[in-house]
Image (cartoon, rainbow, N blue to C red; front, side, top):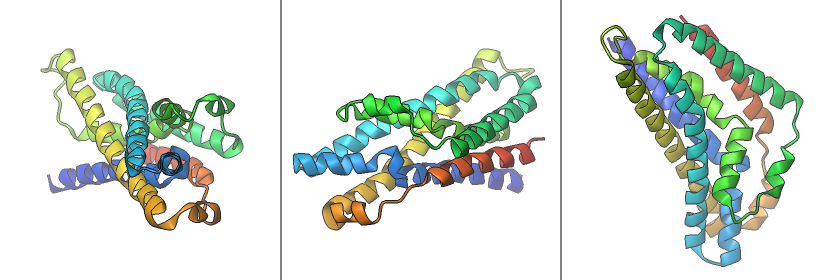
Length: 220
């Protein structure tokens, strides 16, 4: 019982850690929030931009997790679903390691449409896929007797869990990215962005592969 509680807590902490990781990554958009505030010369513009980025990220997480929430009720195929999801995450990570070019269509999205930009970036970089193995692990810790529960009830429960995972992850992403954006706007300034710019693309791709491998190892 204690082991189940600790493993569940670890999975939820993984959701939060992934959100913090996505938040501090400049590729997820916090520099755009700084830019928006500097151009408008108004700190409230930074918060508005962060909300738009968060909304787009949340929608991207939901768009990836909800289809898996429909599949989870197929208890007989749970192991196969987890293995397939793990290979999907590994495959995307390997692809991003080989192809480091950013999708060209992202450059065509106007800066004023931050929510759309955030959604497309998260989808293109597989941010939602990173959560799938963690989400499936959390679903495994939820006791659901498929023989006595209606399929509709099971799907409703897993969909609600998917939304909770997406919300917790996005909240962590907005807090970490927002804290960094606010620090740059209020104290560090543009010189920090010019001198301290960091690129996490390789780390991002490698983390996808690592998450997929861990998911395969823990499948039972």
